[in-house]
Length: 264
Ligand SMILES: O=C(O)CCC(=O)C(=O)O
Image (cartoon, rainbow, N blue to C red; front, side, top):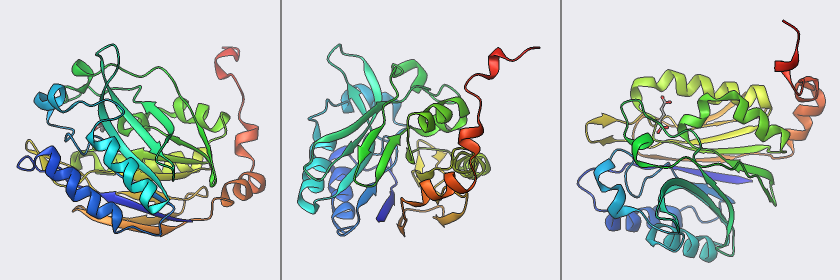
C-alpha cells in the first residue's frame, strides 16, 4: 500500500481558512495513495492556544468537512491528524479522525495525555478516555497523538487490541527531536507495528517544530524520514509484514499480561 505523510507548517500569519485551502491542494496531489496522514492540530496550529476557543469545531466543521470530501473524491483513507473538537458538552478535546473512502469516520480518538510542559494544552483541553482500534482493508489501525508516544503501556494495550499500524500525528518541538526519533523507532520494535509518525514543521509563536516525520516498519527499519521543513513523504509499505515479523520473533506473545503481580 502507498502512504503519504504531509508534514505541514501552520505559520502564525496564515488564517485557518487559508490553511485548509492549502492542505486541500496538498492532499489532492496525493491521489493514488491508500492512506494520507496530516499532523496534530495543523488547522488551528498547536501553539495558537489563544485561538483554540474560536477555532474549535465539531465533527462537521471546516477541517473535517474538507478532509471528508477529499477522501470521498479520491476514494482513499485520510487521517486528518487532529482538530480542536468542541464536544456536545462544550468541552474542548484534541481529537484525531481517520476518514474512509466514503468520507465517513472509521476511527476517532481524543488524546489521553494532554501536554502541559511549556504548553497550555493541559489547561485548555479535556483528556480523552477511550482507546479504540479500527479494522480497515490494510489491517487493524489505531491513531494516538504526539505526547502519547512517551507512554509504552498505552502502546502495549494497542498491540493487545490488535493494532498493526499506528498513526501518530504530532506537533513535536525541534528541541526534543532525538527523543522523537528514538521513541518512534522503539515503539515499532517493542510492539512490532508500523509507526506512521507525521509531525508539524515550521515555527509557531516562536516555537520551532521538529519536522522529521518518520515511517518505521514492524522490524524497526526506518523506511523514510523527512527533513525539518514542510515536506511530503510518500512510502510503500506491506501491511502483511506485521504478521510475518510477529510469527518469526514472538516477543508480543512472550509478554506477560501483568508485571505488577510479580513478587517483590
Ligand atoms: O513529549 C514531547 O516532547 C512533545 C509532546 C508535544 O509536543 C505534544 O504532545 O503536543
